[in-house]
Image (cartoon, rainbow, N blue to C red; front, side, top):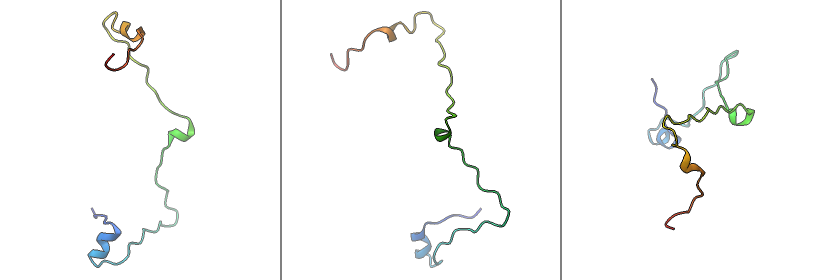
Length: 67
């Protein structure tokens, strides 16, 4: 496995300027997924606690910090 170096490191090691790899003809593009833009966000259902009454405190109004 080849270690990728920054341009600064390449210059310091006298390896010359970095040139990105050229894709071969017919080579598939890299896989990218951005579900923020295509609207396919996945959200799990919020699991209810096993103990009855565990969510009762969520219905009380917040008093803020240090009141």
